[in-house]
Amino acid sequence: MCILIYIKLHSPTLLPSAPSFEQSLSLFHSNPAFVHSSIILLSSYTLTYSPFFMTLIFLFAILLFMAPSSNAYWPPSPGYWPSSRFRTMSFYKGFRNLWGPQHQRLDQNALTIWLDRTTGSGFKSVRPFRSGYFGASIKLHPGYTAGVITAFYLSNNEAHPGFHDEVDIEFLGTTFGKPYTLQTNVYIRGSGDGKIIGREMKFHLWFDPTKDFHHYAILWSPKEIIFLVDDVPIRRYPRKSSATFPLRPMWVYGSIWDASSWATEDGKYKADYRYQPFVARYNNFKAGGCSAYAPRWCHPVSASPYRSGGLSRQQYRAMRWVQRYHMVYNYCQDPKRDHRLTPECWG
Image 1: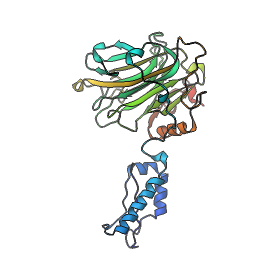
Image 2 (image 1 turned 180 degrees about the vertical axis):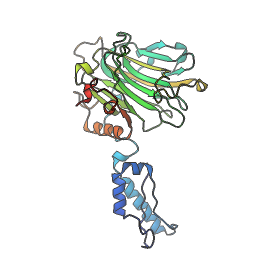
Image 3 (image 1 turned 90 degrees about the horizontal axis):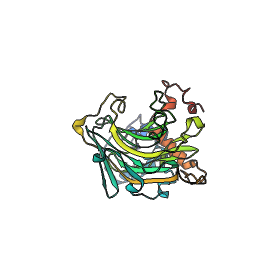
């Protein structure tokens, strides 16, 4: 986080056009982009006297603590952490290899999967679910990863080929010096049949996802789908009609694969296997809720302190922060899309 520093000098001949302290503070509060990108030091001589130095420190502290939290580098606290409600599960208790077993390794419940020019790898939950919380901590491959998709998602593609539902968290690989894009997406009854209707929202994260593990989760209930990053809600997809919401049981998947045709800047940059293998690491697996075999009275899990579901005011505040500062695409705001096909965007 960058801080605007204003030094009010004793001599009126110095910095005659400098703004007042009140004007500087107003700018500091009202212009988030300015706060994030600028450091202004209004001074024209060397600090030599300790009282003046102490005044500088005091003014710096005032500005630091008076900065609105919504403009901070890190999102506001959501006040509630859904992941804490679910125990970490053994990988083999909840999942199995789906494809590319030679490119999958488990070490003390930490799963590593990788892609090279021969194949990628994927895994799938043992049970299907009709609602629940599904999360994993993931660490992404650094450097050149254009064309590579690392994914954690829900789907029933194998049960309904060509007419399936899907809820995605996908990390779109990138080129040197550019951030990963986290893409969230929802498909409802019809992908792979020539009439694909994606509902993409994309984000650049407020941290480097290649440096450490971060927890990514989907909470799916009969009322809504919530996407979370480190328990911060980044997107809410409400059920506005049965036609625009996935209602059939889905399994949990994870994978790494080559999607060079579209993944990075609409296919402009392809996977470059000079940089292989591309590695993704998963741990802290969590999956809880109502399986497809659970009794009808099984109560869906909630993303908030309210058992009835719905986000709290504090969670909405955190989500608005993420969408204001880190969302880079929203399908509902894309003028190139035919929004007659996405009626949930209307209201």
